[in-house]
Amino acid sequence: MHHERIARLLEKIRREDGRIGAFIEVYEKEALAKAQELDRKAKEGKPLGRLAGKAIAIKNIIAARGKRLTAGSKMLENYIAPYDAAVVERINAEDGIIIGSANMDEFACGSDNTHSAYFATRNPLDPEYVPGGSSGGSAAAVAAGFADIALGSDTGGSIRCPASFCGITGIKPTYGLVSRYGLSDMAMSLDQIGPLANSAKDAKLMLSAIAGRDARDQATGGTPENGKVALDFSGKPTIAVAKEFLEGCDERIAKEFHRLSDSLGAEGYQISEVSIPSLKHAIPIYYLTVFAEFSSAMQKFDGLRYGKTGRELENLTEDVGELRGSKLGLEVKRRILLGTFITTKEYHDAWYGKTLSARAVIKRDIEAVLGKYGVLLGPTMSTLPWKIGQKMENPLEMYLADILTVPANLAGIPAASVPFGKIGKFRPGMQVLGSRYGEGKVFALMEEIERLDRK
Ligand code: GLN
Image 1: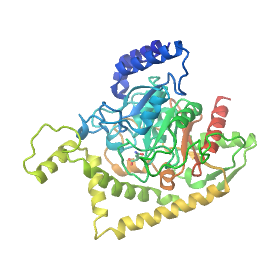
Image 2: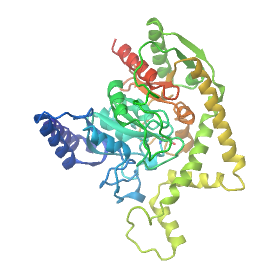
Image 3: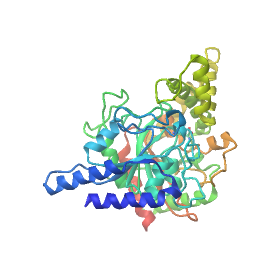
Image 4: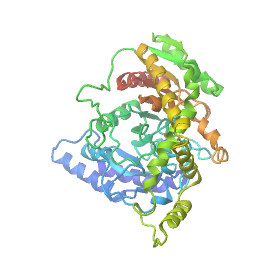
């Protein structure tokens, strides 16, 4: 029966993905073979893993052995991953069926998926609009009904933004909960892999499968097994709303947010308004951190080590320069240049050093609130999806779209987006942030928001 269902999904993708552009590559053969294997195992009465039969799309910045790992870039157009990422190993072990690699903004730089070097992904709720980014292919695959669950990566909102724009659920786990082994890094102190799904329940299921210690990622520590993190929580977490979350927010989104907070109040939740003034500096702190770490991560892509370029290099410096010039997109180049500039010896203290201190302040302020309250609640994005082609000219405008999502990455805390209400064709996402390893409370409130949304 798994085989039949997967065959149907693949057929749907063949028919409809031309219009959406969710996938870079569809793994037809492997997906059908895995489905068949599961059917066989089931028939023989063998136990199946907890992801048995789930069709899973994987952002193409996560390595799957023998498959192209493009990171949405021409630089890696024909690079084949030599090994599986830790999350891919775990999905395979739990009998998930990986059906393909999802499109994304080049090297995860972007908020709308129009920065893929291949093609833009469209929003399944309205193909004239962007799906959000940079995990836009992952979100679109779930929203279009091509996949049950998808994996994305989130450095400054790349799971939550597209989840919110496509009307689905997504969570960026605590930094260190999920192994980044096999994830091509964007900014290594911020990156985290996480699930996108149709419900909090499915997101939790996927997280329970991929979370846990991995010796190959030194930042991992907590596992559901060692009790450091519990994904379940019973009771009503106390809620704080930072007033900064609503400043400059689209009025229609703010209205839905207030409707949600009224409903939660009526259910007996205790909601307190707080202020975290340092949040207003989140964007420059985030982008300076990203520029610095990204420019360093990108040094290895010189056209020699990863992917075939098909040419002989004669003069190393010139040829590598020319290659990077022709294979990398404008936004990626901008970040490499700015990052190189702010980390040069002369400017290091003025820019990067200051950024690190400012990041510590924002982290401390957020932690102080989460020391008093169970969760923080606010909208995920301050805007609705924009039309494809808008915001392309001005990078600053694009950067500002991340204002509500970047604080969680700076603080290393879990943050989820869950749809609530309706605005035209779209469903605004509500963001739930918890303390480090506080996923249980985050999921508890997400499930409550889903329940209230159905009411
Ligand atoms: N939009 C943000 C950026 O471009 C976030 C990217 C991400 O989370 N990968 O930096």
